[in-house]
Structure formats: structure tokens, C-alpha cells
Amino acid sequence: MIPIPVDAVPASSLNFDLYFERERGAAPVLYRKRWHPLEQADLERLLKRGVQTLYVPSVDQEAFREQMFEEVCQDETVSPERRYKVLRDVNRVVFDMAFRGRESEDLMSLLSSLAPQLAFVICREDLVVRDLFSLMEHDSGIYTHCVNVAVYCLILAAALGMTDMAELEELAMGALLHDIGKRHVQLAGTKQMSGLTRQQREQLQRHPTVGFQELVLRDQYTWAQLMVVYQHHERIDGQGSPVGSVEHEIHPWARICAIADVFHSITSDNAVRAPLTIEQALNVIDQQAGASFDREIAKCWNTKVWKKTSSRKS
Amino acid sequence: MLEHESVEKNELAEIVNRLRCEIELPPALEDFFDFEGILPTTADERRRFARMDLRSFGALEYRQTFPVLPRSSCWHRIYTKDLSRGGLCFLHSEQLFPMEQMHVILPAETVKTVLPRCERMIIEIRRCQRRGPRCYEIGACFISSFRDLAAEIASAS
Image (cartoon, rainbow over all chains, first blue to last red; front, side, top):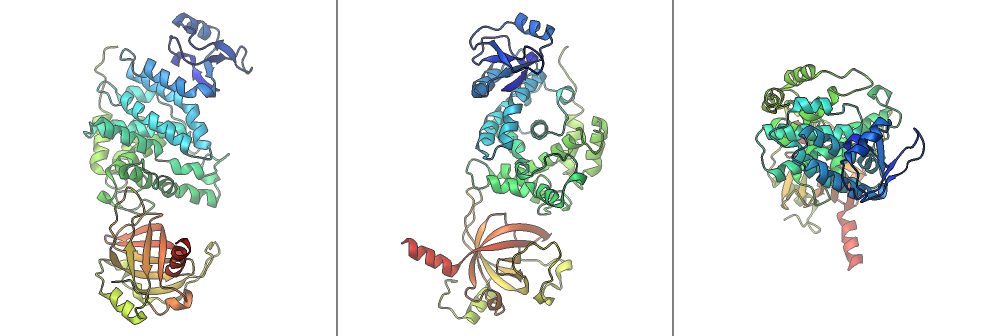
């Protein structure tokens, strides 16, 4: 069963069954059969009863994700922030299951539909990153990390002048895939580097190489996407890994992803340290510009992206 | 030029030495050719075979391995660093990527002590680290010898 927050469900005739927990912790029972109209008043009644979550059977996951995108994410009357939140929530469980799966096919298939949807929702004139930040989750989970990094990459690339939607979708896919090499690291029960065995630490450090190896023989990925995966831990000063490439030897998309990756990591919950505020994190990016990060891209991130304020009327 | 089954070993070395070398040794590697002998192992060593220093020259032929990375078949002179029965470490002027497969020819006499039967091998790149602007240290494993390949082709046909 795929959980979905009640407030993310559109009042509509849905093409998938909905289940709910009659009592907290009980097995979900059928709430609404597919095609049976669901009204806003029904959803409000559920919330009033304290029901926060509905469930969709796993067999319906594709129809569910498709309809949620069409009904909510493509609806111009819905705010960009809410569209982002729904898109994020409907894909979470499927992503987590696919990421843990033995074969990568399910994950690749999910990401190939999520990437263009994310680009569609995020790359808009009226989206303000500070508004979005308050809605974004900041946990250290792999799904949150991949989606947030992809969101930041899209926003940064657009601010740098990338306007071609096909290119933005391609970048989103690369960013969603950037940590795919971590699929092979067994980290159960450990959330901090100090708690890892030497073997786990080595595996973790090798994740860009492992991710690259997993994707490079497939013909659906571009070199730019592969470089996002392989080079996102390289540093402009050559002190990064796995190669120690410098400056323009690092693909521009990997330079974008490096900033997005670090920004999300330092602003997210972590067992070792408290998350930094936006301002503190921007200071870190500024201090590392020219060493870890491309100076021009870092400047664009700190000024153009984060200084933008809303022009919408509330 | 390097189809060499009948070419004598010293002729092969001459051919390899005539290849243009584009590697720029950084200051830290100026004494690169001064080492020789068996390399020490460490407590956490996971290599299957002992490595021998092999500060010499070799030839590398690019092969098209990945659909998205065009490689034209051409020869490059490389500096070999060390060698074992399982693989090779060498310096090259360009970055190579994990899983790329290439041909390598090792004409040095000392190679015989480690690989007595073959000097032309197919390698698969395992790691690549930048040591300078035109200098990458590359670790590769042997996946097939030229003789093995000939046998494979013969048995398949």
C-alpha cells in the first residue's frame, strides 16, 4: 500500500481505489472504490475525524501517479509549491521500494517519468525558492535528498540561463540519479560516518564510480547525465573524488549538482549536527566558492536564486 | 603497425618508443623512472597477486566501449608503473573511465617474469586519478590476453 496525505488527494473521480485506517494501526480497509466521486467535503470529514493518510494499493501505483500529476500538478490554479508537494509525496514510497530493490529497472522507469514532471513543476517564473524551502522536507533520507538536489539543480540551471525544457528534464534525470551508487552500500542502522565500518566507508566513497558503472552501458543516458553521477564530488581545486579533476575538466552540470548536493546536505537533519539555516548554508557556499565550487555558479546560487522574492499576491 | 605476432620483441619496443608521448610528468613524479623491484604489501592488502615495479613504456590502443563516449582506434604511448598477474598501473595523458576496455602492449623484457606468455592484453579500467594537467594514474585489470582472444575467436568460428 502506498500512503498519501489526505490533503494531497484531489476532490475528483479517481481511477484507483482508496483505503484508510478505521482505527490507528489497524489494517487499511476500502474507503472509496475507483471512479466513485470524491468531494472536498469527504476529505474534510476525514481530516476532522483525525484521518491524515489514505492508502493506494501498490497495483494501482502507476494510475495513481499519473492521475495525481494530471489533476494537481498540471492545474494552473494550484500554487507551484502545492504542486511540488503533491508530486513529491506521490512518488516517495514507490521510489523507496525501487531504490531498495535488487534490479534497477523499476527505479529507472520511475525516474524517467518523475524527471520531466519535476522540471514541469519547478521551472516556472512564479516559483520562489524561499517559499519552496519551507515546504521541502529536510531529512537525511535518500528520496528527500535526490528530489531536493534535483529541485535545486533545476532552479540553479534556470537561473544560469538554461531555458530548453528538454535539457532541463535531462538535467533533472541526472540529478535524480546522482546518488544511485549508494544503492549498493549496506547502511542499515547507521546514519553517521563515525558509525560505519571501514568497508562501508570505502563503499560510500566509491558511490560516484559505482553509479557511473551501473549506468554507462545503458544507451538511454547522455554523457552529461553520467558526468553528474560520476563527478558530483569533484572540487574545482582538484581535491575532490574520484579523479581529482579541476575546473573545466568537471562537467558544468556536475558543478551545478555539487552545490545543490552540499546545500541540501548541510540544511538537512543529520545525526551528527543540527541543520544550518539558509543564511548559514549560503555562507558556506560563499566561503567554498573557488575551492569546492565553481565561483560563477556559486555566485548565481547565492544572489540570483536566493535573493528572488515573490511577486505573487497572497 | 602493431599487429605484431611475428614481430620480434626488440622491434616491438622500438615501435612503441616511436609513438608520440603526450604525458607531462608533474614535479612530484620527476623520479618516476627511478624505482624498480617488488612492491611491498600492506596489512589491509586485498590484491590477489604481488605487484612488481615496472617503470617502462607501453602502448595503449583505444577501443569503443561505451555508446556515449566516442573513441577512435589509435595508439598512445604510456608509462607503465607497476604490474601484477592480475593488472597494471600506468600513466597516461588523458582521463579514462571505469569499465572502459582497451588494448595494451608491454614490450619490456621484465614483463616476461610476470606474464611469461603474452605481452599484448585487453585491459579494463578500474580507477583513474589526476596527477597533473596531462598526467593521469590509471589502474586496470587484465581481462583477456591476445592469445586467449585468438583462441576465443577460433573456437567461435
